[in-house]
Amino acid sequence: MNRRDVRRDGDRQADNKLNLDPARGEDWMHLDACIKCGACTAQCPVAAVYPLFPGPKSVGPDAERLRLEGIALAPGCLAYCTNCKTCEVTCPSSVRITDMILQVRRQEQEAGTGKAICRLGMRDNLLGRAEYLGRLGTLWPPLANTVLGWKITRRLLEKTLGISARAPLPRYGRKFRTSDIVPLVGETQSYGRGETESYGCVKTDQNRRSAKKVVYFPGCFISYNDEATGQAVVKVLEHNGFEVIVPHFHCCGVPLTANGRFREATANAQHNLGLMQPYLEQGIPVIASCTSCGLALKEDYPRVSAPGAQRIGAQTYDLFEFLWVLHERGELRKDFREVQVSLAYHAPCHLKAQGIGTPSVRILRLIPGVKIQELDAGCCGLSGSFGFKAEKYELALQIGSTLFQRVQEGVKEEAFQAVATECGGCQVQIEHGSGAPSLNPVWVLYQAYGLGISSAIG
Image 1: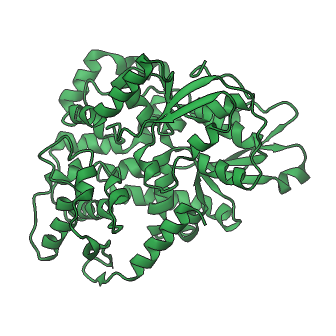
Image 2 (image 1 turned 60 degrees about the horizontal axis):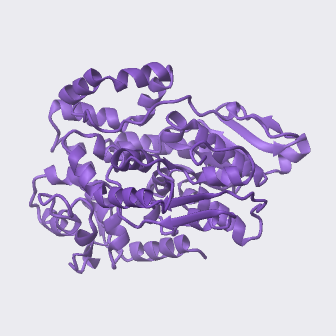
Image 3 (image 1 turned 45 degrees about the vertical axis):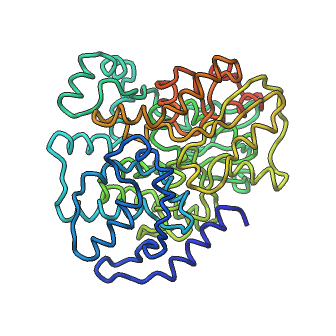
């Protein structure tokens, strides 16, 4: 049993001991387990740089005790919770503090209280729909990137919607499609019907029926901003003998949740679970290369009322978590070429929240020539769409300042060439805050397997 399974079993056992609050209709997130130690606030990246945010303990368990007594508090500070889950990782009593804060925000939305002023409400609605923005941006990426690069456009967005003119909006590219992936020599492509595409190491119909399979959940960043990395993920899995199935998913729902659009996030989860249900019933693993998507599938989707919800948590793996499982079973292909590269590694907050360690670092250390050091320098500050907001842009940079300084010093001292991290948002923010290049660690594995040369690592 791995660390993730241990943590989930512990959570389930603790959840079973909770009292059910009839007024809320659900178990109440370990409220009485809070021992007021303050560890969550001490480690909160927002509280560390923003004195007006009282910290997770105050807006979570402490405020919830008042709310249960009917005492309503001003909701404004709740918007400064970035949903990074650091408080939950830190808490010695496994109090689900972030979930508690999000639940309060959900109740405010349903009650129609605590609404933002019109332009900020429009902004949050827009940023929450990363999928729709991506669809528009990928219709004609050069035009979208040019227009969004104009200073006048950025100033207009800040004045009208409150989207920072200085924030590092990710560039759009071609939409990720498995049909764009060129098969390796001697292999064929296969496509599913309806709402699924598949790509696999198959040569005959008989092999196709017996091939090992995985479902790949690419997420919005891969789908609309970094399709090349999605192709690299598919080729790495294919190189290890798997047919990769890619249903036409909606956004995982994390951006919607972070921006207070809870009903829409639930609808997306139900849609995605409906697509995955047939594969979940067959025991086919689900692979996520985005740490936020992976966390949502593991921890949020099991709470959704939809077929497949009871299976999704146990059958979802981070890409490198899955590859490490293969390694432990002796099934990972290790026909590695030498890759001479020195990297720093930044662990995204939502990877830490999964409780699986840093499997990408362990995998990359198997490759000859790769040197990699873990930075352990805290959050990058972007936190999805948090750092794009005009009133939070500077705060996001302050949150990430320790990380940026460590990166700049390391590059200057030639301790490493670039920063590897699985989160696309972290990559964008690290490059913006430090000026150093960043890449998804799958590219190192892609090059080690001889599947191609990544321009990101030379």
